[in-house]
Structures are given as C-alpha cells and as structure tokens.
Length: 299
Image (cartoon, helix red, strand yellow):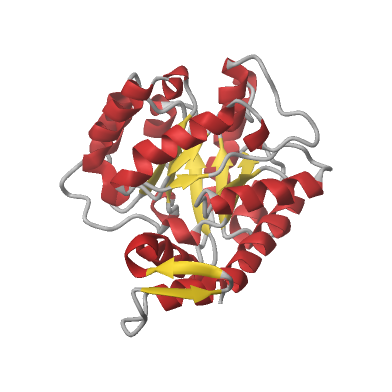
C-alpha cells in the first residue's frame, strides 16, 4: 500500500447490510445515485454476477453511471472489479474518485501482489478496500496466517474482509439448502477459523450472503447467529433482505447497548449483573467497544 495514502478506511460499522448489484442492471445510474433500497452500503459488481460476454456492456454501463454521479454521505458505495486488470481500467473512469472504495474478489496469496501493484500506481489515495476471502486457500490455516501478515500494511485502509460463502461452498461441491443457515453447513468451522485468525489482529469480517430469496425465517436465524459471532455487517443480494438484516441489527442494539455502556462505565464494578448475565469489565471490554460502535449507527 502506498505511503501516500493517509485517509482512514470507511468504518466497518457503517456498512450494515451491503447490497450487491450487477453492473449490467438496467437502472444502475438511478440505483447508484438514489439508493432506492435504503441500503447503508452497496457494491456495484463486475465479477460473478456478470457473464464474461457481458463484461464490456457492464463496464460501459458503470462508466455512464459514474458520469453524473453526485455522492451523499447516506450510503457507502463500492465497486467489485472482476480482477486486478479490470480494477486498473476503472480507476481511470471519470468521477471514480467519488466512489468510497473497492471490493477485491478472489483475494489470496496468489493475487495480493497483483492488486497491490495496481493500487500503488493509482492517482487517488482515499479509497477503502474490502478483500474477499473465497478461494481454496481459505481452507488452509497457514495460508490465511501468511495472508494476515501481508495485510498488516494495508490495515488502516481495509474496511473489512468479506467472506465469499457461495464460492467456498462451490469448492466443497455443496450449496445451501432451504431451512439451513450457514452455521448448519461445513462453513461454520471456516468462520470459526477466520475469526480467530483475523479478528484477533484487529481485522473485521463481514458475514456471508444468505441466498434463499423466500426463506425469511431462516434468514432471521442466520443473522442472529451472525451477531452472536460478532459479524456486524452482512452481504445482501436481494433488496427485501436489507430490512430483515437491518431490523435484526437494530434489535440487537436495543437488547445489548445498555450492557455495552455499563461495561465501559468508569464507575462500574469490576463484576456486575445486568440483563441476567454476569458482566466483567476486563473480559467484556472488546465486545462492548465494538457493540458501542454499532450502537452509534442505530440510535
């Protein structure tokens, strides 16, 4: 990462439910400008949601959409390029500096240096980045530890690491079944491992997408588990899921904000009881700090 980059990344706690939209969308310009679905953050996608033979169409659609784009502070906007070469191309688009940052797909030890080369050569220095962990290397603990070490120099410009749940399931030859949360699949052990490897070094992680369009009850169960795991941002590909995710986040804050504030109160006892749970300032401080950051966005 270039030493010239001094601005801090978009806060993880501002992301909420992140809506992904393919750049082939016929109303991309209005979606980019108007935030029709009231998402806290959005990603314009040039990768898996775009067929290879539609890439030029998608790129042109994005270029046109950016021409008259006037950003506001209500929503964070990112672009997911197809690969480092496509990233290099779109960095030259007019108004690209008005985008908050980029989601970097297939991010691992094979691609990190390619992305770094493109990023270091750019003129703009205020972008935020969200690498996606979605290749076979995710299953290799040592590879993830190595990747973490290489990411240390990027840390202040990474909003979070996104987890590509569907890509990882594809590598295992499975897909989500109706009524099953991510935590009912083999990915649960991967989520455990990624949290232990990355969050202990201060990297935030975003929860995988829920791709069942008409199974709201299971989505609610999954978001409950996401929050229990400390995932305070989640990918969404279906507009109707945004409200479900955001409501779950809001309810979580209603239930736990007082606990978090109490832990951080300088006058609190070292150990105390609140909402039927024993709380300790030393043991619950990190949870409380993270929860308080989320609370600021939902009050």
